[in-house]
Length: 358
Image (cartoon, rainbow, N blue to C red; front, top):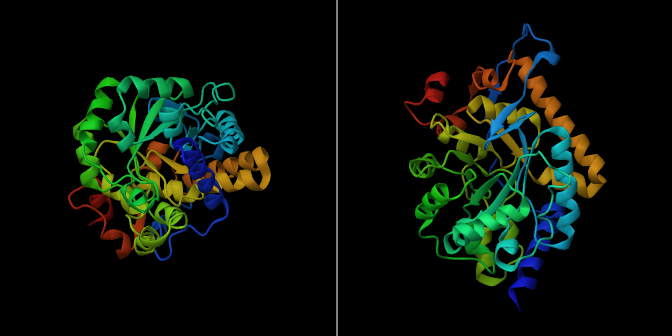
């Protein structure tokens, strides 16, 4: 079988499983339930006075929300991504492609042309670290140009790949690849995971080679190990069952990276604006939501996507009001109370640890 049908079949499988499949974590949560924002009963604010605008990857957003990476490279992805991107443009939020490997390696453009419906939105490109290692910088720049992306997300996904039937098993040369892309690309590089989170050590290594933006894609939401386990057979399926819940919870990943001076996007199991507000209080700049947007589209098309996005933004705004925060910068300083399950992930001698009295 040629690689084109393999890639297209895999992308179609991902859409089906992420829309209707049992691919959530079994016992692990995001840990956002272990973070409580302290209610301010006297906020001295009007809702209309709250400014949710923020910059991420060089683009100003009207609200700290990104439609996180989901799909591309198959016919069905075309209408999905175009309508998601259209809503992102309308709401002034970000939009991220799923992996652009089909575009990079096979020239498949389905799902990757959205600029006519989202001319000013933040559009994030996306490629795996292994594919980035093997590709020339010029080829990656051409991929970004074709899709009109403002920045390149480079995704790390070793747990997913070793379970995936067609997956890679050599993850060497990652730091060297990131250093090359930061040096040679003319757009920001965003380091991201795929459902297993990013630790402080990994973020620090990336920062040392110039990466300034990071996407947690932590555990607690969609388990991409689970997705691939349901596509696999025999040994790989058994591996997927063993490592189904592998990873760093999303709130913990934000805490791990807090204070490093990197712009953090909190994704992974995020489904509402309160979770995003909590992530911002922990040190994130924006939050990202993936599967719920895909499900909204499946259930009600572009109107459902728009309604869901508007609801999430309203929830962030209300959380800001109820903490007395007139801006995202103020929300980042909002007082909170955390539980021991979360506290064990907090790095000592960091600003976050000091705020929490740890």
